[in-house]
Length: 138
Image (cartoon, rainbow, N blue to C red; front, side, top):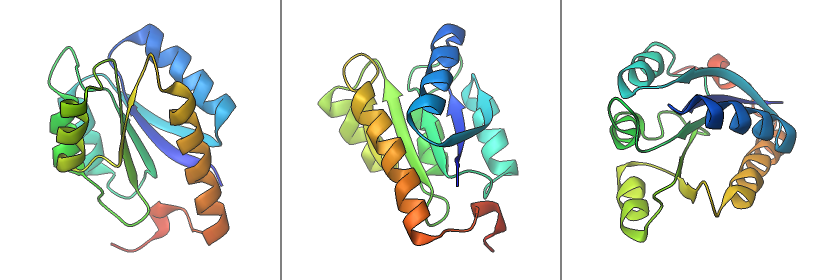
């Protein structure tokens, strides 16, 4: 079962390559993207059960990924929030986790670990026999 994935990334080139790599490295189904905090929060509020994996960049042209993580956290059992940033310092990672992120990865140094996590989440969902989250009652 593909992971229903929502991506928040404001850089079009990074977004394009990241989507292609995620589709190659893990069984994901991209269900949407946002480039600003406001777009992401609006989509997440309208679709609280539609996603399994939320991937968020921290520094956006408008707003902050931390604001998205704080507003969202882990909304439902089985949903995961992952921060993928160029600024994954220890302090930033701790702050993101305090706000509800499940994991924090550096775009330049940790892509292998990020893809491994995505693949592991897919395997975890398969082993549990999860129904798609949009079918789970709130």
